Length: 214
Image (cartoon, rainbow, N blue to C red):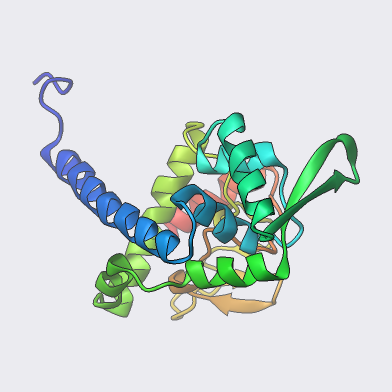
């Protein structure tokens, strides 16, 4: 069979499902942003920087949100006029700037990050096991996209030097986080951890093997 002209129907259905969920996520973002007097990109910048207290360079924000540098410059300028953000010189590079949220911007970013949405309501209807399984599957997809260069590097547990997969086999919380010295389960895995420290490639590969093969 020609797989190029006859794609796996399950993969096609998964893609269709992601497309439909993305439509709802986009609509929810437009709604939450509009109620806050923002456009969607401005809202995304606030939620991103709310989890990055040290701030990010504009080019890093642009890469994370997959927008052009010029568009990001306009977005940051608008947020600065709204006193939600400030840009200051980067202490490590005099030619660069760091964008950080003001207290008002941080509060708004955190509220936007947890704002009620149709997708959140749907996910809350899943069992704990289904939620954990979905999160684990998401991590696999995100890591694959990351390795393909389709998305920026994420601060995943599975790429962190503190993560010990399946360190407690047979337990409800089989993994271990050395940073907090605590057992964690699949439900506790993070896609964007503030304490993330990237492990070297060889360690990441070994960690991934243990995580996926157990």
